[in-house]
Length: 151
Image (cartoon, rainbow, N blue to C red; front, side, top):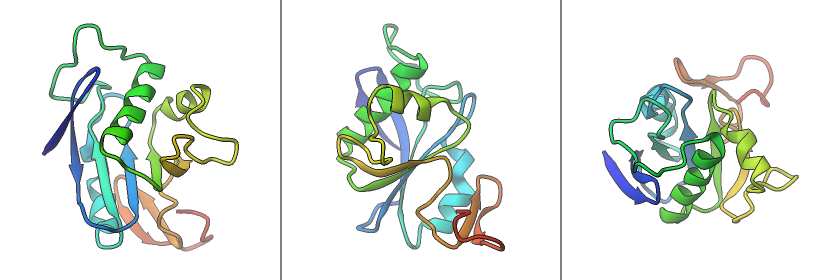
């Protein structure tokens, strides 16, 4: 697993690599990046998937003693992670975490849903990078049966 040193400590992450469109998948509290393994398996042929293990309880590496691990602090850590890896024009997927709200409250997204750094095209609570597919952490991605907006 790759890792990057950030202001709060070392964050491990999976990166499928390549020059494809980037999807960053964020897990929730008391989980780790493995939550997205089935989704990554479904998306990796068409997208570069980047999956950090955030310090939300399922991480293996301790953060620095002075690390701000509040919701707003982790939101800033996500922004630092994206900057450090120079990830641009990406889709951000969030599962079960108030971090999306913190990113908005911290001014990290615009009213249109774009990443203000400008790192991401949109912030989403579902993987909108896969039009016509429905994705879930447990089942991965499959063709949508109802609406193409369910992705």
